[in-house]
Length: 317
Image (cartoon, rainbow, N blue to C red; front, top):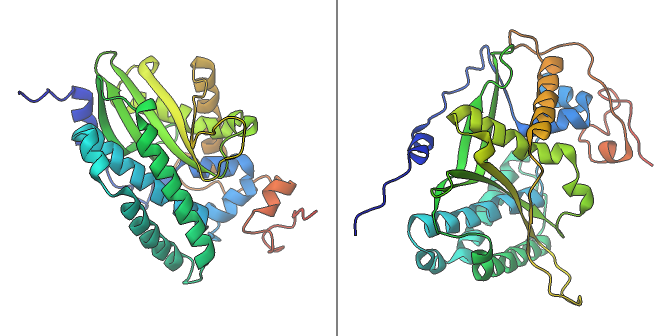
């Protein structure tokens, strides 16, 4: 049987190698930077502009990386080979190996200070096994091979979002990108790990939703692909489920943000305002004061909440 011809959009994405950022005159931004700025501009300035960067590590982040890589391996094998080949992977073993390796990496980042213990690691490992087993049984509900190709995992995006600030470079990576040949549709999927899933508060969080809305716009801009032919979806995997409820709870939840013209314009405007307030046109940082945005939530989890020399607007109640 002759091999199917690979669609041109897949060839184009796979052949794209973003140039290195030249930090001598360019600044690299990401969605996490933008999100932090929206939360508290002063925190962003301390973290990125003023040299007080705090490395944030946690078992939740380590676990998230291991789950991402495991699900991405399964999906890549499923689309590039077959579902049978994907099912033959010992995904639990892969997850365990990745969890251990990532913990060691994050332990080094954390100045060789442990941020978890054996009991918690065992709990997170068992949660991951439950997610993987559920996913392997139910993935057909969420992923089809009929007319679908996998474009890639960790697909890079790199572009200049604001033409007036040519030295400010946005860089991001798309967890999973699929292409439907029959409908000429791209689907961008962002995998999120969550303790018990997203409630209405998370689903309606405008900044959280802007991540995929911006990725939709950026993919369209970078590859000259029709923006109306791009679908986006959050693929949320839950560590914990209520097993004694009246109805069986799913380990996987999906959320599709509204991403029409109004939402695209709003997200684009918000990102441009961040760039314009945080940088000068030559790519240097704007060294003026950045607004402090104290709140119980913001200050409780801020890495600078114990340093009054850097920030005296802490809220502890």
